Length: 516
Image 1 (cartoon, helix red, strand yellow):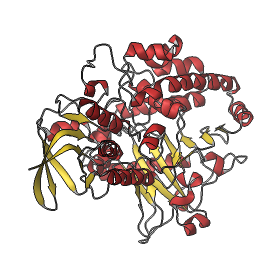
Image 2 (image 1 turned 90 degrees about the vertical axis):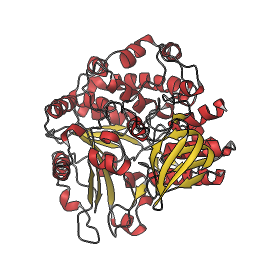
Image 3 (image 1 turned 180 degrees about the vertical axis):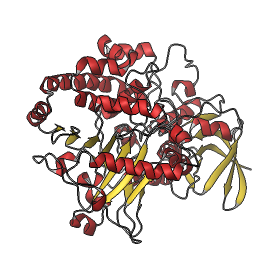
Image 4 (image 1 turned 45 degrees about the horizontal axis):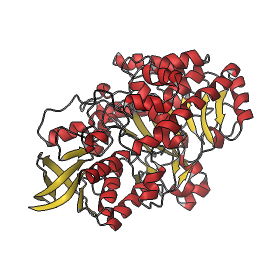
């Protein structure tokens, strides 16, 4: 049985980050990936047969990837900033709220147009406060964990700490904003990938909100030029150049605490030994590989829909062009009251109606994902992320029917705020099928081994340690420890993991290097 310094289980972006750092440091590294390609959820795919468009099939925007990782690994990655933050149609009207990062006056006028003039100044003050959190907390994510007390001292703002860290996020939203539409736009950052109400006693929504507003020390969500596959393609190249051995089509079947990895590759059962195993899989999956009792199965709560349109749809707001409306995040039926109502419906076992969702158009910012012919024709991609569709609603028996129902719910929700229906605008693939692809939580579990379809591998944690947490070992200090000294988390399930960030991979690599 051959031996390596490090074996990495899972070739998503975090695994590739860890492999590159460790190989550059002279460690012998083997990375085992179950699928035929590397990148995990951060990949680009020609999703529609015979149509030359490479969509970011699962993950689609970048905020949490630290510039230092890009710099230190020498990655050729371009992240494109969107001028428009968001557009939110007011249901039942021809008005909408446009947040234009390039025109403060136009944004103020848009607030006034939806009856929220009094919230415009509050908006700037609110996001000024989150920007302060970003500047103070985000630089720490690639360093050993701060304690809660150290993080609070770094923030040095008791009001912000109370509002965003200690009390349910709904309290500060309701206290700060009067308009239901404005409140909803703010609340969405607390719900992407998280199933929770605004007044969530567990503060899961707060943790989700924090990660959404601190990325890059600005909170901006950028478009990866060339699609998400360009990000992981650069990481794969860097890992290979550093000397890491990357093996695709290698399904890991078992691990042992003393560093033995069993896997299946090219029809043969194989075993490899490692001084350290880095688990770029969900903690729930890691327990299964170790034949240990699994933690509570996490639950995702989203549906992902990819569409390819002949052109962008017309808006009810005749004074606004589609390039502005779809140039940022397009919120659909996501007022505060609608989001809270959707949560109540889902907890009662019902599919929310209307379904809250948000859309992003990659091809407006980066047309390179389309062939020149498609781009010249006016075609565009739409990525839809539907909220409050928890995994508890979906079973193996009803998955196909629920996928159809969710597709219909997404189209109906979008149609309810547009001047024309979306379905007739869908392109068709080589077989004449509409270019629309829906992924349920169960589909994500099957394709990517995301238990319950949870895109974060499990509940998010604060980016600091609680006072009771042990920080005695390198793995504990870097937030990657498991119950076994030779096995470390290196994916989204690590503390400070989640999103396309590379943070879990970076911190696992640092813990290995500090240990040895």
